[in-house]
Length: 115
Length: 118
Image 1 (tube, chains in turn purple, green):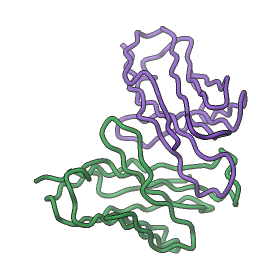
Image 2 (cartoon, rainbow over the protein chains, first blue to last red):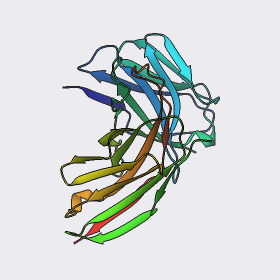
Image 3 (tube, chains in turn orange, green):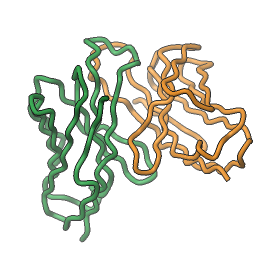
């Protein structure tokens, strides 16, 4: 069966510090990978998605970047965090091919607090 | 602008009772509508996915309905249990044809926070 792992579960970082959140998927090949941010009282916002190694599409201009160095690894980074980067970050995967009705499977998220 | 609106924002019901959550959307073109359950501090878990031609879909005690003409969906929970306490999120996908290229446009609602009390 497929599983998705995110770490760390919680993170407290000072303003201006760098960030690296990691997500890995097991049990599937060529997944589509996604990074979302969920702010309190708001719907999930897609930040990045990737359909393959080294292929990253950005949905929202921001202080963050993403990379996919391996097929089942997705990394969210920042060189200098802002207060507005606080939030709940979710990684998700879906099947690479087939009908568009495939669900996205989410990890358990990282709660990021910027001080 | 594509939007998904859910109501109520929050709901409290007694264990064993039924409830219905609502979702209205303006996403076009429409591909499919999804309901997710999100426990506090966890990632969302898919409950149902419905395409244009499907009016209803069940997953255990969860039954989702879709009226594509009025652009409304509902999620009905039967015989609620304490473990049903969670946020329920309605998500609508734009029409992208038959292939999932990873860039499907999903619009997320802000969710309904459901609390089941004993």
